[in-house]
Image (tube, rainbow, N blue to C red; front, side):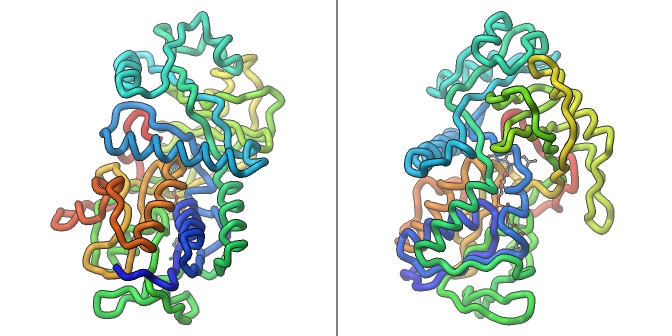
Length: 389
Ligand SMILES: Cc1cc2nc3c(=O)[nH]c(=O)nc-3n(C[C@H](O)[C@H](O)[C@H](O)COP(=O)(O)OP(=O)(O)OC[C@H]3O[C@@H](n4cnc5c(N)ncnc54)[C@H](O)[C@@H]3O)c2cc1C
């Protein structure tokens, strides 16, 4: 790959914006464009728990740990970021028919910071939790985990990128990659106008598989419909990220909670035209489950449902970097994009500007899909292993 002078990045979620910010920092000329407003996709409706919780491959674990490291650096160098980026720890416990003992052993063996907490000690570690709601065997506390409010992070990354000279455009409608004779040469905007570029980055979240398919590159897709629920502001302090059998909970910078759960995700109805309906019972159920696990059982009310697709590659692992068969095109498509947002943007930018492939991405190339029989996207209730978020 030759050193590009101008890179066009499509997608105003965490992956596109992070890549753009790292590209401009690395010396590239950058144009970043997105269909609607910044963070209007999955990044604006995510639990955004920063973690490498649970059992996963060594390569994926390492990537996530490095991803969390970058957040710590971000926090250290961006005064005020403690409003939207917190490492107050996370607590998880098993459902009635399972145990998290093996998960705990796995995490400890791999050097992942994990503390087993007996029910009787929950109040000292996580005073925001009702100990009676915790599994009888106890819970795992991961002191080094946290959460990020991606709309705030994205705004800060866009501001950094603009200050360093990036050209940025919101609300451009659906753009597409302009490919001529197997080479990406720029972007075609919804109004038919073209932006020429030496390299294009496709970071359109759940749309990546369809956007690549339009260019003749097929990848397996396990993207489900999903939603999070934002509550009205609560008057009890909640600091710990909670991953419980029936609800996940994390705070927001403006004193609300964000809630989700696998069972609630699976209740989303997908119409033939792709529109999503979140049943009222699921909203009420999430509020109830969250109130049940919180100390003092506060009354929670719904402010807003954030529903949409949750990008997940067919085999669950990130798909990142050069797109096979099309020169000068890179793409990013991953679950856990909150945890991986800063590091993947950094690595992809480095590959584009420096020309050398990153060994950290060896296991996560699009090339692993070449020659595979590709399944149709899963509309709802898709693959969702414990602790993957
Ligand atoms: C319910 C839920 C819970 C999650 N929980 C976690 C978690 O706890 N921890 C974690 O690490 N990750 C979590 N994730 C995953 C994480 O949020 C995503 O991986 C990440 O936000 C994806 O970012 P992205 O930039 O790829 O996509 P997006 O945020 O969707 O951004 C893509 C952007 O591209 C724009 N776009 C699309 N097509 C075009 C086009 N043709 N032209 C121009 N613009 C276009 C869209 O409008 C959008 O703004 C969760 C996701 C969901 C949905």
